[in-house]
Length: 498
Image (tube, rainbow, N blue to C red; front, side, top):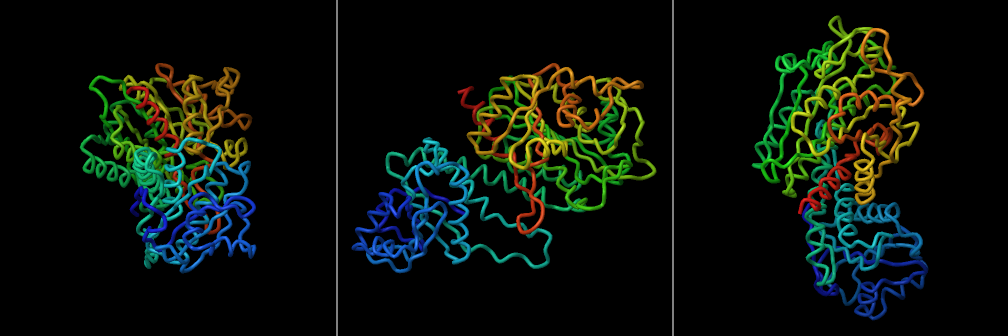
């Protein structure tokens, strides 16, 4: 898909479909009024018929409108000023892309010259338009024998004023990078466990290394992990025939010696629960237990494409959690890379076991910040539903930066407390720490566990269990969250550096 910014006269735009905005009560936007005048009132005459009132996400497709070079005109409702927000803006973009796909047009020109949301930032308005359009056009058919019919839409032009053209170009480039990163995260998440193994993820990281000169990848295998003392991470993969991997991707866009920002992703490529076996119903969705890792891959891709002037390290702790005669048992005690011992009371609480060693490993980079991303707890879904990422941190300023990035990227997060009272739930009679703390506050105690390994640096934990994928029906599949939040966070860090 090619996006471009244009500023020419909309009446002369040669496109298969020109998209114009209609506000509440059939009020034409400025661009729509220009088109209406060129058509000698043809558009306003149609509006009098009541086919479209301007309610949010309403559409009306017109053919051969006189006075315009465009073959079709799509009128799209944006509602009242009070209705303008990102949620409704997304609905509008979804409606536009739905018409574009159903009509099979190859080119589309978007002349939306009204404020489409309550955010006045024109950069974000254009960037979101690019991101959400790209997301709506995403198709997964990697594992189908018959590939999906290719989407005919090849060109999307975004019409802006000449004064806004430079800003819009920047927004387009950033939005395209985020679309690409999100699509990679969705592809990885949607692949089944027999395709997307820890070894496969390592191969993908090496391919990124080949693609970007600014990126170097190191794969730490099981022998080296054993030498490093990563017995907690290794314990998760004990029951699997698939070897575990620690994947380290270093992006060097900043000055040598600048402290990097580190992202750590949970990469459980399939989670049976191990000996603490999960119920069979819906277990197929446990291929999504590596979506934290997928978001690291997606964000690293976007960062490389943007060529951000900072240093970033992406770490993926990849393993498959299976039951077998070699599998870790409830009650086993293992030693982490940090030297702390863990009593594994439940082998289905395995994400924190791979992350704790990866977080200890992250400390060797002397990071400016560390953010881990994981589909860690079902309790987060109970707390926040499927709308927000859970954010827990040992640094309130870092948590606030991530929340702000989520607001800017429309990839929202919400902070949960990390109080000492919850730490006591992890007490063990036989080891330094237990890997579960009971049902109360499950999301918080999981983060409390991780906090034991992050005392030397600014750290935040993103629990994406509720937002990483959609269940059931046509919408089932990976969402690519939280690539937008992570990328925006890194954009903000780059802006501070500059």
